[in-house]
Length: 187
Image (cartoon, rainbow, N blue to C red; front, side, top):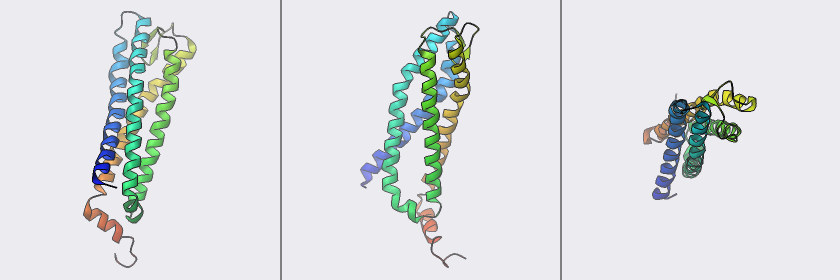
């Protein structure tokens, strides 16, 4: 793979992951709480719903960029991943974390749609129902209260494992990882 294509893949991977992580963290820490400052309980639900609904297409684009970049990087690193001791394990951990983050993100969106289907539902915050919140929406909000932290935790772990994968690409680390697979070479 050409160096320009690899640079494009790495850029898509990193920018997409940064947006996915940062946007969900910002919404969890700021948007959900800020919605509680609305003039009324129904306004709280409306503000949170508008914010999350506006974030959804941006988040989808970020995830798509990250996945496209990941596929491109894996294509360019395939030989090294199979030849270098430890690189396949790192790739598998990264793939598992990505799958988990995708699953939690998708389920959160299903719950979010349930919440935003009633645009001006009363709420204490974006993830805290009030006494006037319909039971189905309240149940979704309670689940979202926990899941809002799962996505940044998983994508944050992806940032860390991506840093680890970058360290594995240092020439001395690659050489050590490849020679470690040669029987009798290391004692």
